[in-house]
Each structure stands twice: as structure tokens, then as C-alpha cells.
Image 1 (cartoon, rainbow, N blue to C red):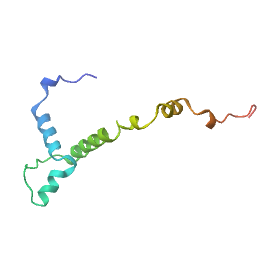
Image 2: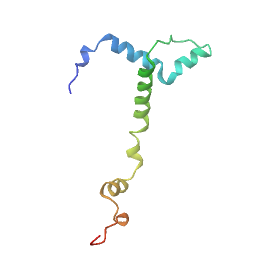
Image 3: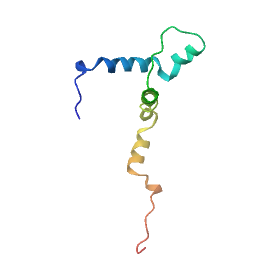
Image 4: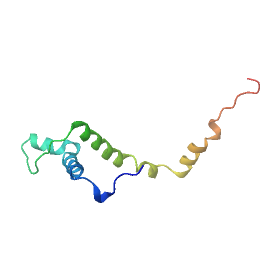
Amino acid sequence: MQGIPLQETQWETIDELIGNSLNFFFVNPAMHSIGITFIPSPASHPVNEALFNFVNAWCVCVPPSPFTLSTTTLISSAVGDASTRRYAAPGG
């Protein structure tokens, strides 16, 4: 599915992205609650903030996982380990 070109992105979308980035993992609102106010905290919809935080956390946690597995582990899990295969006896 093709979307709109990057240069035609609406300013409301960019503004929402910046607002969610400032509220990333609720760091800015937490700083405001203890009295540290460097950057004003924009109002964002809680579901949008939660999805934004989830996607960012997923991008940090999941992509490195293929680098932690060895090639033989990936191949044996894709093909199936012969020692763990169970075959049904003929006739039942």
C-alpha cells in the first residue's frame, strides 16, 4: 500500500510526532511533576503515546535478537532438529 510522499506530510502529523517524542516513556511529564520544566509538555492522546512508546521499545529490543543467536541455532530451529523428531509408528 502506497501512502503520501514524505514532502507532503501534514504539519499536524509532524507536530504530533514531536509531542510524542517529548513525552517518550513519560520522562518529560515525570520531570514536570518534580518541578523540572526545561521543555513544555505538549498534550497528547494517551493511546497515541502508548503506541509510540511500544514501537520505540520494540525497535530497541527486538532487532538485536538475531545477532545473539548462532547460525546453527537458527538453521536447526528452521529445519527441525532430527533428535527431537518423533515419527508415528506404521499403522497407527
